Each structure stands twice: as C-alpha cells, then as structure tokens.
Image (cartoon, each protein chain N blue to C red):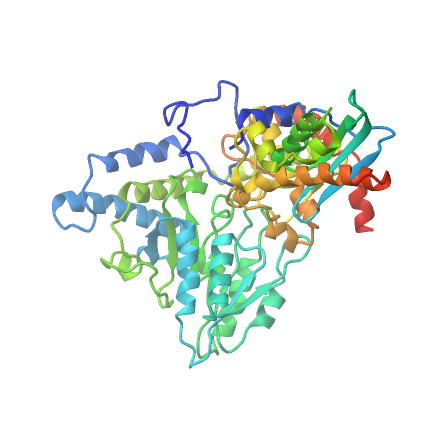
Length: 129
Length: 416
C-alpha cells in the first residue's frame, strides 16, 4: 500500500519533535479525521539577508501517511526562505515521497497547511507582508 | 493511472522473516483437512451439481454431504441451508428481501443494531435513503451490548425484520441472541405479520452455540473463510415458513432462493470446515487463556492502553485495545514491519478514513476510536507468538507517542 519512501519516513522521521524557543507553530487537523499535525519553525536571515527557516520540527498524531508527509515537508522546507517554503504544494510532497495512496492524499495537503500556517503566523506577528 | 505489477509471482511468500498472524477475525487460513476434501472437486469431480447425469450426480453428492453437515451443526433440516457466495451476499439478501415484504400498504420497518457489520448496515441505510423502508438503529451500551428491551420497544405493526449480529467482528462482544429470539417468537404468536429474526453469526460460529432451534433464529448468515474454510462461500440458513425474496434469480438453484451454478468445491469446503469446528470446541478455553495473556500483557506493560468492550460476553479470540496518543494504522504498520499482522477495526473499513462505527456506537470519541487496534487470535496462535508481540509492542507505542508529542495534551484541553 505504501511506498518505500513513505515507510522510511514513518520508521525514521526527520526533524521529529517540538523545538525550544520557536518563532511560530502551525497546527492543523482535528480529532474527527484522526490526523493532527504541528509544525514548529525558527526563522533567521540567510546569507542574502532574507527570512529563512533556520530550524524546523514537527509533531504528528496520525496514520503512516500523516507522519511521513510531515517528516518530508520539514525536510523540504528546512533552509528555504519563507517565500520559497510557502510555495511548497501537496503535489511536491507527494512526488518526493513516491506514490501516496489516493485515500491518503489529504495528509500531504494537511502538512502543507501546517507549514503555511506556521509561516503565516510568523509573518503576522512580525508584520511581514 | 498505472497498475502496479507485483514484483514476485502471485502466491509466492515475500516475507523472509517470521510472521505472526493475529488477524483471524479478518480471515482464517484453510485447514489442511478442508483443503484436501475440496481438491477433487476442482478437477476430478467437475460436473455441475444440477446436471442429472453421473458427472453431475457425483458433484451433487459432495454438495449433499456438505449440506447435511451444515444442517447438523445448526440443528436444522438440510433443505433450510442455502449456499451463497459469502456473508455479504447473505446479509444483503436478507435486507433487500425485507424491502419487498408487503405490510398492508405500509412501508416495511426494519430494526438493526448500531454495531452491525457494514454488509447489514449499508444496505439497510441505502434502502431507508431510497424510501423503501423505515429503519430503526438500536444503540448499544458502552460495553457494546444491545438491550433487548430497546429492541422490543422499537417494534411496530409494520416491522418485518429484526437483524442483530451474534458476535461483533471488531470487539468480539456477544449479543443476547437467544433472549431476543425467544422474545420475538413469543410476540410472533399473536402477530398477524410475523417478524423475521435474522442474525449474522459469521464471527460466532467458531465459539458459540449455533443451534437455531434453541436460539429461535429464522435466518442466520455464515461465512466459510472465518472458520478455516475457503473465501467466496457462505450459508444462509432460512427456516421453513420464513418468507425471503431471492437476491439472485435465474436457474432456480437452492430451492429457488439463490440462483447460480453451485460452487461445488467451496461448498464441500464449508461442510468440512463446519464439521471441524465441532471438534475444536474444546479449544475455546485455551483460546481465552491466550487472549487474556495478550490482553493482560498489553494493559500491564503499556500505560494509557484500554480494552474496548469487556471480557465478559465476548468471544475468546478478540481483544480490541485503544492506545492513548497514537493512531491505529500507525501501530498496525509498525507491527507489520516486524512481522505481526493485526488490524484497525475491521479489514473492510481500512479503505475508509472514518473511525469505526462500532467503537463510536460504544461511546468512544473519534480520537479514541482512531487509536484502536484489533488483535484476533485463532487455532494456530501459540503463547510464544504473544510473548513475541509483547516484546515489541511497548517500544512501538513509545516511539509513536514520541512522534505525537504534545498533541495528546492538546486534545485533552480540547475535550475538557
């Protein structure tokens, strides 16, 4: 049912866990659907002076796909500028993981929403448009 | 869309590691006795049992023997046994038949419980949505049992069918079928239009008394592949005098109640399987000991683990357990990677994302229902299999709880 990449991220998730002193947390999902995700970001300037994701972590209560998509998206977002990270779409997460079963595609979407919520929150609290 | 081609030829075992199968409620392996009795009926005895020449008669003999074995097990006449393609067909037949039952111009009324198998629940809901029947769904208590008083109270003059499962596939909880059957039979003595009492006994056959005279059941659904028989064959017991409209019409097989060429090998298989069940009844106690070892082992070694349902009034082979702070599919897949096969709720529901309707009906929250795993043992499960399970499960739950981190606390805040 699941690709090798999905199982790998499920067995050895990257960037797992909350981070101390983060700048923003994106939290999505609900108990009804059974998948809840939190993405933590720390923001700092990169070499070009742009706001970028310096550190990132996640917590996920959910199925295999929910855990692997959050793990994957944190890997993809790490080091990216906020604007670049904002452009990550669920299709990007999907293709990075190989095929996601159709019934689980919403997990990739949830992970995108969690990341965008975290970035949005950071921008809001720092008055960045 | 591309179709994935299996990397190994079908039928080849792909797992080099040791496998521990703990999903007997999903299906059972075909026993060697069943297999060897079935084999000749694929090729040597190939006739159509409905043909009257010798080739047909030879096949018919196998079917007759199977029919009498099933009838013997259920304490009924062989003519009351209808062979089907399985329990989904059996249950659909019963519900769809009820939609056609005439009750002096009134819409027929059907009563089922909230924890029925989806092959009862879905056709019943569909019939109600289409306006063919009025449907009453009886709730269950937190222990998963239906209250027979509630069933009796729901009966109306136009009630044509009451369908309550004998034992639940997800939790193993046993329903008071004999009590309900006797109360309906009593009521039927003075009713003009008789109520048909149906029970889905698929999970019960291995462990419980299925004497239909004693249970006062009019129609009973059985399946071969839960009792060490083949997939794709089942039985619908229909007591004489019980009105049922066939789901499949055509060649008039099975006393006109189920058309279609008989699945000779499968039917022979269910006959042998059901006869063997009788011989394994002494195993029930051993099964309960192994199940309790599993359950006690989990509950004592993993904090925040709970049994869904209760040990009383429950099949000896199922333990449905919920784990705080994890999701069932993750537990299932993590166990799969270590060679242990379990399931979340029912195998049939794994394609859908909604939490188990059975657990929700027992009052569990969605998140608790999502965090539940079904362990079901069987004839070939040994204590050492459970010992091995218990040596890996706490670590898996721990790992998954580390991944979910603070979310467990967030949910508590949401709930309170």
